[in-house]
Length: 552
Image: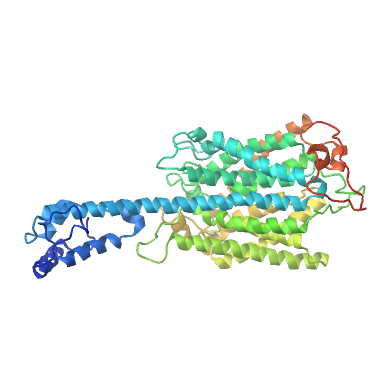
């Protein structure tokens, strides 16, 4: 092992002095070093020095530490009996401990990523509860089944194709071409935990879309769009911005787009905009639900049946977002400067803080904004505002200051309110406001990052390219903003060109929307064989099962 910053001559002199002082009774007992011959003598201070060197080396850097027996034997000097054997033993012990530290580092990072994957997956339960509470009671079972379907179909298709299209490397800038069905995994690049984490992201995008087309969509349409979105559309977009080979990835150091790449850390664009734009086209092509607008074109509120489920789903999503954003580091045991309290673990904590502040600010802004507009304190609107703040901060959560996250959340609430007004004006019906929340707030989050990304944090989170552009308002110029405007345009264009035609074809084949009779009666009765639970309609009359008017 090379002792950095210490001259070898000085080390030899110190060891020689220690040897002369402690030669008399310093035999190393076999219980400490069992393979060491009894004829080998070392001074206790030297043993202590060796232990200190081993135990104080930073865990993350142990893989690069080496021990040379020849060099160490020369340092021990002529006064030590059998110096070569002693040096060899010490190096063997050091290398064993070094390997253990390396193994521990891998285990800690893998455990962190797996735990984050579990948190992100738990968001599916949040989506299910939020969706169930936001629809009318007669469609509860249908919407919960679609959430289960998103996870199940998404898991299979992301395993077969999606992960390879997204991260299969080496590849071109457009699409990955290796690791289909997880071939050659685990490897030095990816382990199974990374696949699981990315799969949880993919099904989150599909879950967003299902909310936009709720209460009027045939079951077969869910199967088709979910497989296509998680197996092709989402993976291609994530390849562009997250893969090391992606044409606009901030990790593609050999070819950074506009000199910066796109900083979409946890997916305001990759996840939220993709899901939101896909839902936009599905809802536009299907048209509004029956009764959503009256014969004069005036908006009629078709409120969800359970605010309790909405609140429960919102808190579950909030909890899961701590895996979504902080977990996107994919590892935690990375020091920015060895031996310092500040490292990637600090950035993980900062990311959790910015996520929290953006959501809280958006919730309060929505609360008082809706109070001014409607005169009510509406819990459902507050929950949507909270989620809008989360969707917006997702892109820049790791590279902005906490105070900037408050700005992000405030503007996100305003963006959501404005998008809802536009949707109402143009008779666009989205039961969960998914396109407005994830598409609109996601787009704002991309712009926000380009304005407020801090230079120090950008260089820490995206190392290897000093001097890359950062936030416009932080003095970093406009290149990052230009890259992020391009991201918004290409995501909207690509999802429009893929999901739009898919929904249109399903519509023409009469596979998209259910019949008016089934929609009026409710899909729980006509498609799923019963109710999610016993309930009555507004007149107190028990609802009866009705046979479906058409297949699907």
